[in-house]
Length: 109
Image (tube, rainbow, N blue to C red):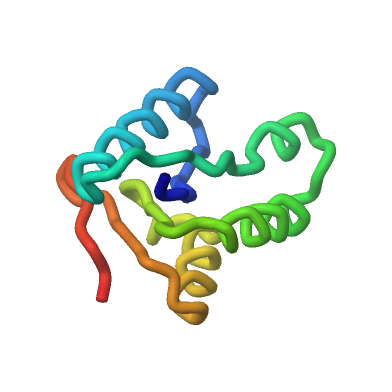
């Protein structure tokens, strides 16, 4: 099973919208990769509960994404500081990257 990690902006989104967006990206990943996928959960809830600082949550996300086969970036990632940082780390460590564009995923070379 292919492991995926999703990085997407969540500012101003409620838990339901976040889950819906994640599920859409999971389905898009299955279509793109042509294999079953396992979602590596990002560490959003602890930040929202004020248990972690933003830097601690980012560090936890980078740690979790290290186990992923693909890193998927949702629409708007390039305007979000945390997503851009995760993108930079993914590129520097040669992770396979997929970006949501127009309700589809596109690979980054």
